Amino acid sequence: MVAITDGAYALFTAIKIDEVFATLRAMLVLDEYAKEAGELSGQDLTDAETLRLAGSDLSEKILALSVHDGGEDFVRPGEYRQEVLVRLFDRSKGYARIRLARNELRRILSRRIIVTMDGKRGLLALEYRGRSGYQYDPDFAVDYEVLTFSAVVLDEE
Image (cartoon, rainbow, N blue to C red; front, top):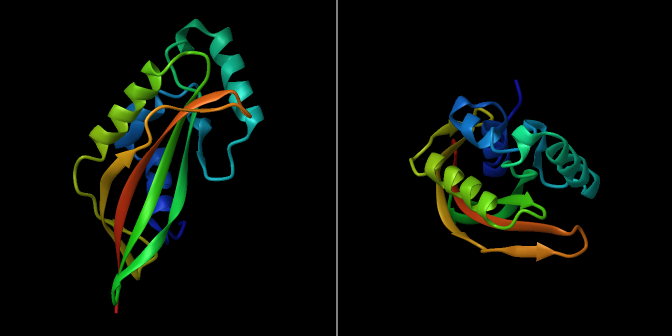
C-alpha cells in the first residue's frame, strides 16, 4: 500500500485508480497520460497527439493532465491548507475539449471527500478555488488550463 501524505498525491492517486474518475480518465488519449508533476514531458504530449491523429475514436480526447503540489500553509496546530493544481493539456484542437475535461473534474470534486492518508493524516476536504483560463505554452506548443483546489489536511495528535 502506498502512503498518501499530501493532498496532491491523494488526488493524483484517486484520478489514476478510483472509479469515480473513470469518466475523466476516458477523456484522455490514454489514461497513462494522467501524470504527477514533473513526469509529463514534451515527448509524452507528442506521443499522445500522434496516437490521437492515428485513431479516429481518439479525436475528441485531450492529450494529458498533470497534478501538482502547490504548497502548504499552517492553519492551526494539526491543520494545514494545501494547494493542489491540475493542468489539462491539449494541442491544435482549441479550448472545447479542455473545457469538457475541466467541467468533469469540477463535477466529480463538487462534493466533500475524506481520505485517510498515512495513518496519521487525513484529507478532510478538497475544494475548488479557481482556474487560470486558457493558457498557451509556446515552448511545448500546447494549450492548457490550470485548476486550483484547496485541501484541508488534519494531522492526528
